[in-house]
Length: 283
Length: 350
Ligand SMILES: Nc1ncnc2c1ncn2[C@@H]1O[C@H](COP(=O)(O)OP(=O)(O)O)[C@@H](O)[C@H]1O
Ligand SMILES: [Mg+2]
Image (cartoon, rainbow over all chains, first blue to last red; front, top):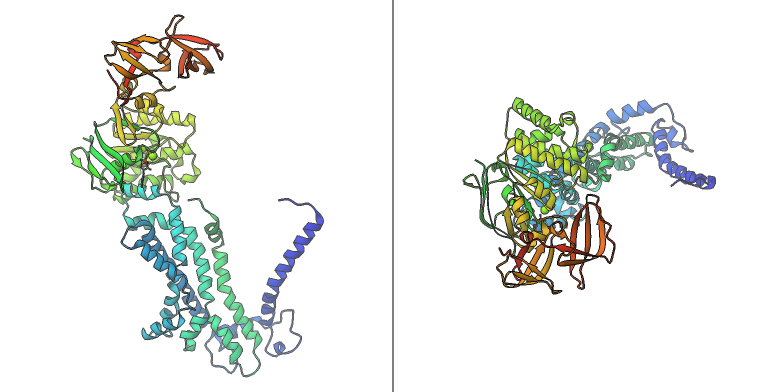
């Protein structure tokens, strides 16, 4: 649609600019706050222009003990924990759902639909709903304060299985038949044909699941008591409460910026595949 | 020797039987076309030979080996699908090599075979391209290339040309025929297009509702159709059918016209006459009242009714004829080109 009326152009631009400002302003303030020293951040009004302490704050946050007077784990360690958890959740979910979707779409076995509906039921049981029994199980298995405990309970869910089922159903039957005549067994077909054909969908799902895993709050909060195992998202909240004195905004904001970084990197790196995976229908 | 034997082959989906005791012998190197209207079971029959559908009862053999329970990959067949079913993420070369790679052929041998097939099909320039970068005709060639490189005992084709435009279809039809002659591989080809069937097949298996109506050479099927169905399906324009009474070698049409014939049948029959066999003749017994002439250039199709009745009849005249609606043309019906069918069963009566 091509509109040439200047007033409409003005209004659309105004709306767009307002939207950008609303989203960008908090990020700008985060950046500005992360570049001042402790004292400046306790004075009103809060600064709107960057200060000169960015790299110092950066080093102090990432490698130092974070908040002054608080023997807390360095932020790099929490970033690492978050990264391991998010990767394990995204990777684990994708592997398991690829396999289960493969089984449901391409194999006839007893109670196939029964399994399908059982997987479907788990959709209605996100971690928050089953949190107590799940905690009990994880505790009994001795998985508290471990990467396994952080990721496994979040891996079990059906959304991705559904998505891959839909993807596989769009692949024409002749593709399977052709592969059978070519002599490909089931796993060969899976590797050589299905996975490459689902490549963009896998990428799209990876981005979504990585961010989902990265943003987990309640579950890591519950099962990590050891500060070496906390994730970055949990620790930001703790930094706000832990300080006896007023919060050290420059460090907290630096931590927040660091927490935002990995999801942004993932999105930018996989942008092309991600968009293809969400929009392409043609196989 | 790659002869194929279909012995009382039957297929049911649940309670519905879709193929009924199919019987047939296919010689080594023969090109067989399975032809019939949509839904008659052609693909199902082909897929049973391929191993993509289970056999409900009966036997399929290649050579003297029963293959009912063999996996498709172990049957030494290659199949070309209607939508080509090329692997979209592989290059043309990889598509053709995939089956050989799985069978663990040496790299050099794979390369040699792929290049040879690419030369035969003239697709050498596209070897590095992906299927989506090819035109329909080129994809068709790649699909055939994939079949050729395997050097199988049997080629199976399921309507391979129906996604191409008319001109390309004619060209590819010729190429498939030449290729099959050259390679001498026993082939089964499924189509609903009777022209394709007539031009390609050494023999045609005409299928209707899961039954074999006739299994013979194109000429046999054209000259001696075994049933009303075959007679109407093969040949274009379609054969004219007129119900008639036969007695003592004479046929009486519903309008009272009598025709001489050599039939030994008595009682109600169906008379079949191909439009191209009606001979225009000033004093011929058949009177055609013209509804609509169709000028095709080389021939003129005259659609109309037998005078004084509502019985439709079509005649095909050579060249251009200026007939107009309401004219009455008279035709002779040559005895040797009459087809007489049982009025009840539709079977041919000699
Ligand atoms: N998987 C199936 N389940 C039930 N009926 C089927 C199935 N596949 C084919 N049929 C039926 O079998 C008949 C023959 O189908 P098909 O061989 O595909 O016909 P054609 O190829 O001659 O058009 C059709 O009536 C179709 O409805
Ligand atoms: Mg078919």
